[in-house]
Length: 268
Image 1: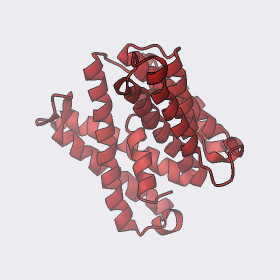
Image 2: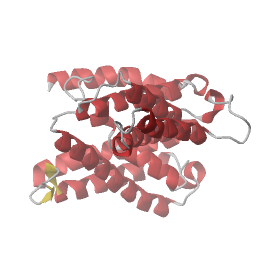
Image 3: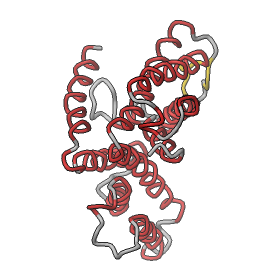
């Protein structure tokens, strides 16, 4: 526990100033790109692949492309061309490896690095886009994720009896999941008193609270997805970069689902 607390304090001391000040809109974008690169590394590590390979480097490049905003990072592209066209060029390179390798490298094998890039790249890219919209929007998403995690843990620990999805995560309970949703809604109500929904998010309060419940469910599902990855690959944690907590994906798994869905709902 002591190691977890020390790591959490140190991480927040680094993380919070970056997202608060976001120097010229660059700091958070670079943070998102760096986290995306680490996320690719962790998934490759779980699968037993080396990231220091042609496909590993391409996967990191693809994730970074998706994590960084078009401006100012991809202004070299022709007008009317977006960064997704550049990402698709990476996909074409993956598919081209099957020809160069004479089918020693197949489309099935290419699917893993492509999906990996999409998963972490789009997730952290949405995180950066939320900050580009406003600090209020970014913190709203973060508070929902954190409130869900804390509420689910506390309620599940005290009242949890019925397993939520034991084949994937044996410790999670239905009661904990419901507690996480309720906790997220309570925190959102308090947050929206300070930052009115219509003014900062373009929605009335009740619809936004309904969305909060959806975001909480989505965040918990993202956590389960990461648990499924680890169970499939037979690993306890996604990485070791955060002592006492595991890897980047262990800490950001919910975020990687919540922020893209927030974007889908038009929050930013």
